[in-house]
Image 1: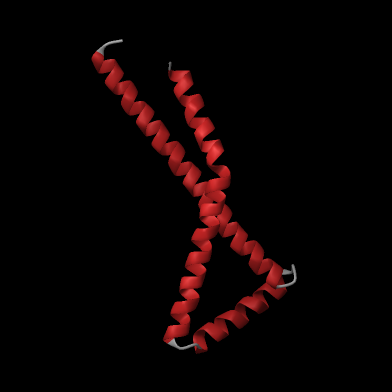
Image 2: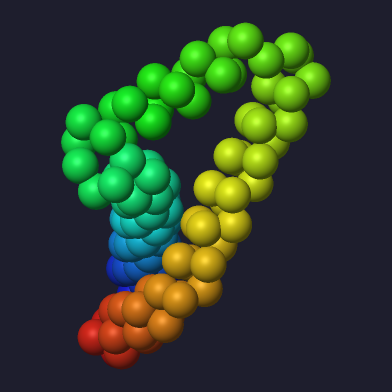
Length: 108
């Protein structure tokens, strides 16, 4: 293999791994968002109408809250989301590692 061919192959491997990582991160983000959606559905008793009533109640309380309480709630939601994201990422890390190893083994 010539030096130029090896350079192109290295870039292809880097791009393929980056795209695989991007897809893995996107799936993790969607699973974490789905967990929040599932939690909202459970708050509403498992029905769409109940969920909308609970979300309307939450929006009403959020609108009436002072700035400090809104910031606390925002931080709670953000920390909760990233906690779920990290949990999902840790549980799915083996899938990404396995895919990277298979990709590297197929190139040899």
